[in-house]
Length: 510
Ligand SMILES: Nc1ncnc2c1ncn2[C@@H]1O[C@H](COP(=O)(O)OP(=O)(O)O)[C@@H](O)[C@H]1O
Ligand SMILES: [Mg+2]
Image (cartoon, rainbow, N blue to C red; front, side, top):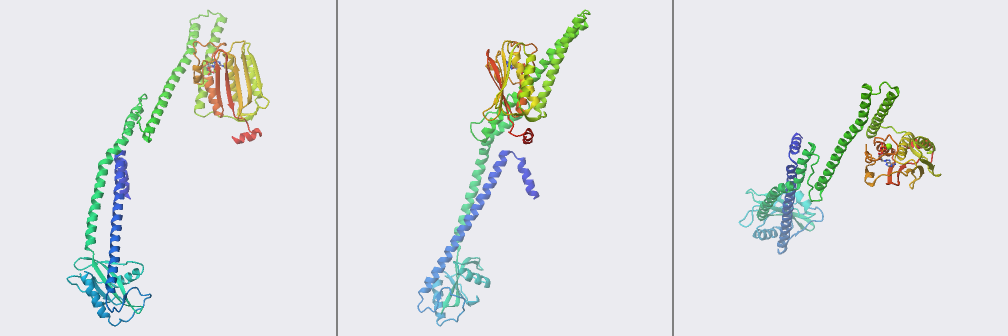
């Protein structure tokens, strides 16, 4: 267990290339070794089985030709031990003579396994092997199923294959014929075969060792490159990109995604820098105005005229309010970013919200024609009432701000195609240029703040639409804009409608 642990730690400390090479090599060694072992075992088994069945056939054929043979070489139908028939010795002597000339030794055993006529070594036949009682029993039992044999060694160390054939007379087993033949030729063949296998095995491993590392190295080279560059990117070189390999494999896709991630990072970083600079700029404008007014008060530019002092103080108050609004808006966005804003979702009719917006719009309007309508079959909306009102007021305020006094602003609500509620704010104002449309919901973005002159004074800070979008999306709705410069702009909100049950049920669904 400890060794395995140490081995794993050691493997983990290696580079990926070496680890892969070693793991593949290890697997190959094990698989090839296993396959070689299996092949040699199967070959040996097949050769020995074949030798055993040829020996049996040879013995039976040899016995068949004996004149006046007093037994048959077969399996008795059941285990019955009989007396030796007459002429048995003569038949056995002929059989021995013939088998010996074939280089096969022969021993006659009693049915119980004890030796009846021991075998003898001759110049032609090798010395026999003495079988134990258990070997005899096993050979007799297995022999009924097929070619049963036993491998043994003589005192001289020669390997032999031994089989048993029952000798049957009058349907009784009268003796057992034990024959053995040397298997030196099989052993020689197997030795050559094993050497050949070993050579092939080692050759394959050597080839793998030589080819594997360069192959793994070439495959993983883009990863190395990626690792080197990602370290530089992590150190701050955000403009750096990884060379994407041409292959469409996992490494190619990884490099591609990595580059995309760096682009996103760089953009986010850029946006953050831009945002900080924009916020500083936004804060500087009112601060400059404030310090200017204060300076004038300090040097006594109002010359004690109470009217002039009040005018200066009023100007300062307006600037402070502007700063206050900016800080409040920034805080709202921070809360929205951190998902800390608590929404009070409920089902409600749009009438009340619309009439409040209408009243506020009339106070902000400078002669605009304001229209408000809700289509009869508009479902109840499922949203946060106060937040929705805040968003609508912002959009209507924008519409009034960027529409001349003789223009129109229209607020409508209607059912959407998929059962949602569609609220639209339409104006006939100056419109938004097409190139500015993609950025309209960005933080602190205003269409060319220096040149675009709103028709009403007191322009905002460019955070209104960004907050509106975040608020609507937090309520699982969406906001879109369409505009034709010189003709007007339409903001469309898609909001969830309430299920057709009580508002309490709707709350429960949330
Ligand atoms: N109805 C509109 N018509 C023309 N321009 C608009 C309209 N609504 C918004 N805009 C443009 O989008 C910008 C961003 O709007 P907003 O985020 O509400 O900021 P703010 O109102 O504080 O300027 C505005 O400065 C203006 O340039
Ligand atoms: Mg606004």
